Length: 320
Ligand code: XMP
Image (cartoon, rainbow, N blue to C red; front, side, top):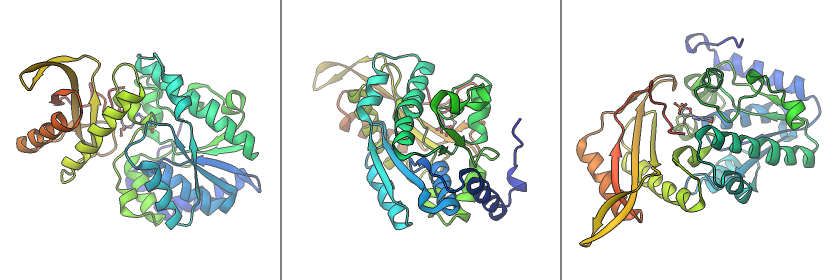
C-alpha cells in the first residue's frame, strides 16, 4: 500500500530533499538511466536524478515515432539550457513493428510496455552498465492499473511484476506518493520553467493512445497533424487536457461534388485537477466550428469532426 502525500500536506522542498537522498542512497556510485519525454513527470524525475547523482544519471529521449510534432528537438534543447544532456534513441521501427496488427487497447498498451521496458531500456541498461531505471510513475497511474481500468505503461510492482526478474534492472519511482497537482508543485520547486511544470499531460503510449484500431505510421501522421491543429486552435482555452482522436470507422462525406469515404476525428477537452475525474470543457461553439473547419480542410481525408461531451467516469480521458 502506497502512502499518499496529499497536496495540502506536500512540502515540495522537503519532498525534493527526501527523494534526492533516496536516489543517491539506492544508486550509490553506480549508474542509473532515465527516459525523458518532456512531460512534467519525467522532467521532474530527470532533475531529481541529476541533483542526486549528477552525470551518473544518463537521460534518454526515446523517439518511438509516436510523439507530437517537433517534440524530440524541443525537449533536447530545453534540457541543454538546464545543463542536462539528453541522448535521442531512435526506436521508431521497433514500436511500429510491435504495434502492427494490434487493435485491442490493452494489447496495444502491453506492446508499448514490452517495447519500452524489455527491448529499449533493457538494451540501454546492458550497454551502459546501469542497474537502475528512474521513472515518473504517479499515484493515479497505479490506481487505474490496479483497479484494472487501464494498464498504465509504467506500473509493475503493484501488479506483482518484479522488474529485476523480468527486465534485469531495478526501478526507482520518486513520484509514487503524489498526483499530477503535486508533481507540478515539485517541478516548479526544481526550477523547471512554467512551460514544463504547467504542461498539459501526455500519456506514455503517446499518440498511439489516440488511435482507435491499428496504429500505423500513416494513422499516427494523421493524428499528429490533427493534434497540432487542435492544440493551436484551443491554445487560449484553459483546460487540463486537449486531444484529438482518429476513429477506426470511416463515414461518407462529400468534397467538390464527389463522394469521399473519409476519416472521423473526435476532439476531447477535459477540466480536471488530478485526472481522477474529469468533465468536458465548456468551449464556445464558434471556437469548435473554427477548429472543425481547419481539421477538415488541412488534414487529408477528414470529413467528420465531433466534440466529446461525456464525463470521466464512465469515460476515461484517452480513448485507448
Ligand atoms: P485516462 O485516460 O486514464 O487518463 O483517464 C488520465 C491521465 O493519465 C494520462 N495517461 C497516461 N499517463 N501513462 C502515463 O504516464 C499511461 O499509460 C497513460 N494513459 C493515460 C492521460 O493523458 C491523462 O492525463
